[in-house]
Length: 420
Figure 1 (cartoon, rainbow, N blue to C red):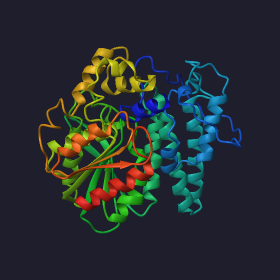
Figure 2: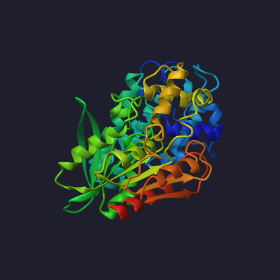
Figure 3: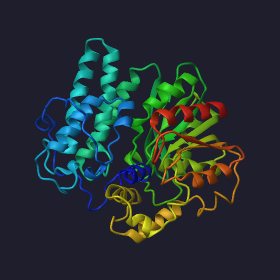
Figure 4: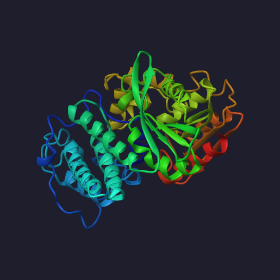
C-alpha cells in the first residue's frame, strides 16, 4: 500500500477536493507549534498513517534540514489535538501543535528570521541557505495546495518570496515571468546562468503537487554549470496555474505559453529550447513533443502514457485517499464523481489522444523510469520513446513511482545538454 501511495500522489497528485481533510481556521505561527527537541532516533514513516505523502529525500535535496523536518513530523505524530480523521496523523483540525500548516509555517518563519538576520550582518551564504530552507518549509506547509484556506495560499506566497530571496543571493540571475494564456496570466520563474547569453533553456514542471519552488537544485547543480537556463512553472490546475484545470488534456499549452514568452527574451536562444516534466508533468511534455516543434528535446520522468490512465473506474476506486482527492482537485471535479474522474483520466492518455503509436515525432525523447513503476510501467513508457525518431528509455535505480531525485536530475540535464 505504501508503494501505491507514493505512486499516485506524485503522478496525479496533490489533494484538495470536497471531503479532503485539510486544516481549518486561521493559523498563528508564533502561537502554534511546540519547540520539542529533535528526536534522537528518526521516526519511521508508515504511509498508511499519513494522508500526505512524506517526501523527505526530495525536501532535503531542495534545502530542508532533515533533523528539523523529522522533529516536525514527530510533533505532528505525537499531537493530541482532535483530528478530522483519526487514521491520519496530519489531520489535526485546530491551528496549533500538531496542525500541519502551523507546524511547517512555524519552522519556515524561524528560518526566515535567521535568513534576514544573516543578510543584515553581511553573511550571504548563511542567508541564502536559510532562505532556501524557509521556502521549502513554506512550500510543504501549503502542500499539496488545495487552496481551500487563506493559510495555504499565504504559505505558498511566502514560499515564492523566500525562493526569490535565495535565488538573488546566488550566482545566477532570476526573473519572475508573467506568462499570457487565454486572456489571463500565470507566473513562471526564469533562472539564467552566468555569462552574456543567449542561453539554451529548459522548461520544467513537476507533477500536479510539485511546486515550481522545488526545482532550484536541478538548475544550480546540473543545468547552470552546463550554461543552460531554466524556466519553471506549476502544472495545470495547481499553484499559480490553478486557473487552467487539468480536465483539458491539452496541458502542454502552458508549456507552449512559456515558450512564447521566452522567445521574446534577449538572453534566451529561441532555437534551443527543451522541456523536462516529472510524473504528470512527464505526460504533459510527452504530448509537447508532438505539438510544439520549437521544443528540441524532451525528458519525460515517470510520466503516465496510457495503461493506467485508461483503466477506468476500477483505477479511480483503488486510488489512495490523497491521490483521489488530488485528481479531483486538479480536474476540478467532486471527489465522489468516480465516473467523471475516470473519463478525464482516459482523455489524458497519449494513445487515446492519437499521438503515441499513431504519430511519429522527430523530437528526441528520453524516458526515465524505475523498473517496477506501477503508474508508468516500463512497457507503457517504451511506447512514448518508440514514437520518437530518437527515443530512449533509461531504467534507473529505486523502486515504485519515479526515480530518486539524485538519479533523475543528472540524467535529465545530461540529455537536454546533449540534444540542445
